[in-house]
Image (cartoon, rainbow, N blue to C red; front, side):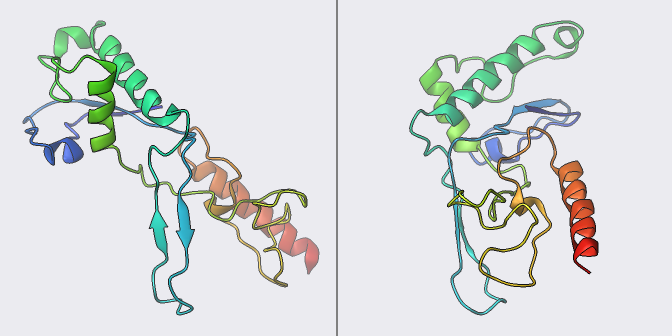
Length: 182
């Protein structure tokens, strides 16, 4: 998946010394279904204390996530070489045309990678025999009566697109489930 910005989106590369051009476009590859798994844990019984979140980027055994970004950079370059973009674009800013090898591209990608602000799956919904599921298919928290979760945290896997439509569908389903219980 790509984000295609009509502005030079260089916030993360700037940390590495890249300069933001006055004008530009950005194609940033993303990993919509990462193999790495983060960890979320409570730090306190106090609900005002934020939980500990460790994204654990690039910890998957097969290095799928990093390879996805390298492939994405290569695809972005291929797209940039086709018309009409090729006639409009003047130069590649980041990682730069001199970065060509898989290892170099992977190093760059690991340094600039970031979340695209759609955390999901921390309270996975699943079948009764799914030991990793926090909620059942009726959105009820296992082991607690009278509490349901109806947001992106129940997604068993991440969507390959912006999750907003899925979140709305979960909310609509929760209305039906709660109404049926009333």
